[in-house]
Length: 491
Image (cartoon, rainbow, N blue to C red; front, side, top):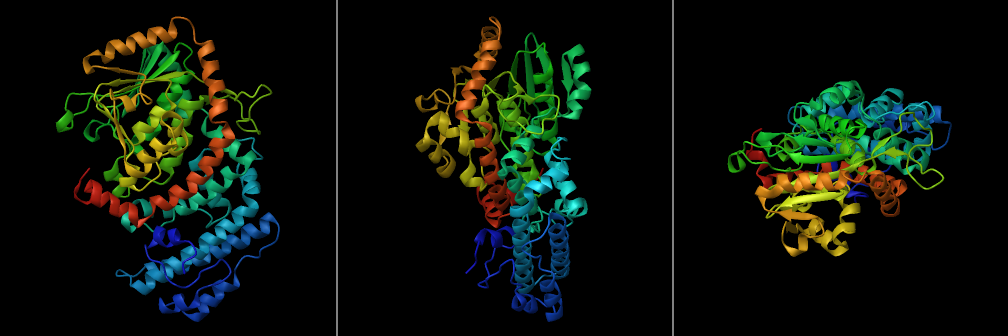
């Protein structure tokens, strides 16, 4: 039987009865797919040894992976790939992923040391996986492989991004390396540092789909993706993080505000919408990379929760100091929910200090209908609504409506839609009138008790691996077609 059915599903959606292991090359499957016994034997002869130095194992693993990928490409090259060829390609992918995981179990810590100059350099996720592909070819996809994958619809992807999830999961699972990576993703982006002086002088930053405005002691971030109900995608992700950085870096700002801009979609034209989560049409069309999920939750979402890290790289990563505090600069955040907060937008409410919602606004996580993991909601939502309600929301699609009693644990204030601006201004004045030193300290010590960095790191290690399988699963494609009519939609 198939040792890990998700691996089959992640690539081709079928499970062959043959057992595929890291040390067994499935010659029968490869022969049925059209590869010669000599090809299979040559690949088998390059199986990496189980012991050896980092350099020796990295070289052997790279050679094995590159050989396997070349065989897989031969099976994928035909315009009309047969079932036997698909089965052979899936078997090769399984063996390659086993080899990657075996190497990473032994050498993830050493690999990270080399990729970050012994943790003296802060390397973001996209740079990390790219440099890993350069240092150990085949361990993660090359830029050319990623470009080719981006050109494919989700149903046609070859699953090369799974290797990115395996690498990042393995790094996060190592305490010292994982803390350092979390810290690296909390550092201000270069673009934010470049824009900071201008923003401090003008109080406005136009970032394409995101706008930041300083209003008194508040910094207001507005996500503006009007045609898609303020959905998030690969285009909005970078500007949103830059906007969060600017608010956290500007000493004239005490409180951050997140709000959706006015949309022009027919049903809600001329109205503000907080957000509709990930753009499912783009996801279905294959235009959202797997790294989107990890860059989002380790990047701007975690910055909302933890703040930005100190300016100088720390080889120890985001470890608590002698008092148990994490070394970050953070501020209070207010969310203004109008109409609805769906999926990723609802996830943001878990890290807000105050939520103002228009009466009747819908709040929900359509994880069951989507088929992906809803960010860190599995970790954070139970703290707000309790374990049972969180399970109902994530596993069964439970929704909340602002103003109804069961939504009180997600919202701090519920007001009539025409009272939202006044409620927001009153809340900003209340939070800033008496200083915020104690407020930041209080949120920090609350977080240390609720979600210390190692708990988050361990969660994200599991999330990186599991979300990679979800992202590449045929079940996700089916869900998007069944529940969202994604195959009938255009961007």
